[in-house]
Image 1 (cartoon, helix red, strand yellow):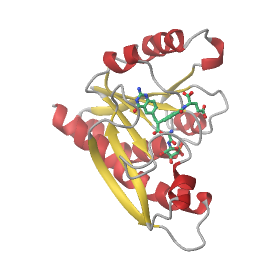
Image 2 (cartoon, helix red, strand yellow):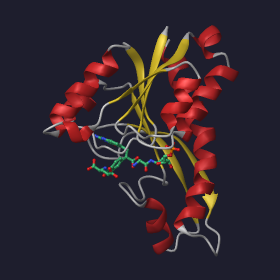
Image 3 (tube, protein in one colour):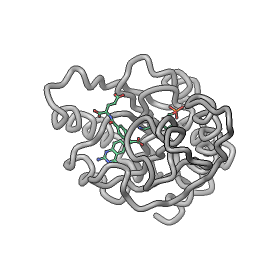
Image 4 (cartoon, protein in one colour):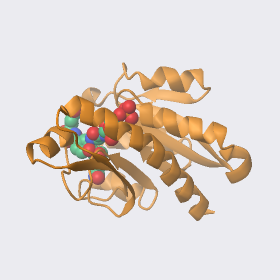
Amino acid sequence: MKNIVILISGGGSNMAAIVRAAQQGQWAQRHGAQVAAVISNKADAKGLQFAQENGIATAVLDHKGFGSREDFDAALMQRIDQYQPALVVLAGFMRILTPGFVAHYAGQLLNIHPSLLPAFPGLHTHQRALDAGCKFAGCTVHEVTQELDAGPILEQAVVPVLPDDTAETLAARVLTQEHIIYPRAVLNFIKNKS
Ligand code: NHR
Ligand code: GAR
């Protein structure tokens, strides 16, 4: 079985979209793949409950309990490797990962970023797109490399920016597209791995 481990920090709606796609698309039976675990760096991440309700193993590893990013990432790797994952998926995971972590999962680490990369890497993407006067925005699934939000692009989706948009209304419109492209990118990745 190809195990998928998903890292979250919050709502977990992208994680839930992937879990639902795996259930509805019978990924286990048809592709030998399953979401094996969901790991959060925040104990109060809402997505943890969804994962538990769907019979998926969960773990919390609070980065605040570690002295350095390297120590946190080492502990995170140990947790993840319990599941011998074929793929590690960042889904609203909000901690920048160390070079050691990225190297450990080279070629098997994906992220979804809420902008049309290479525009607006980093944080606060929706407000930055509004401030720049963009007429379109969107989201990008990419492979994670050492350089933040700069790895090879696998999928993108575009949404219009509307005249009265706030960062919140734009984020919500982008998020609906994230839920479409991320499960598709994960499935394609799994299929190409076999
Ligand atoms: N790590 C590496 N090495 N490369 C990438 O491309 C990564 C990554 C870790 C996370 C997701 C990314 C996004 O999609 C991601 C891509 C967090 C931050 C950040 O500044 C930036 C980008 C992303 C995720 N985090 C702060 C930090 O100090 C904490 C912010 C917070 O806790 O709210 O780590 O946008
Ligand atoms: C999503 O929009 C995701 O693209 C973004 O956070 C949201 C998480 O939603 N990720 C980042 O900003 C990473 N820095 P979710 O927890 O409901 O999937």
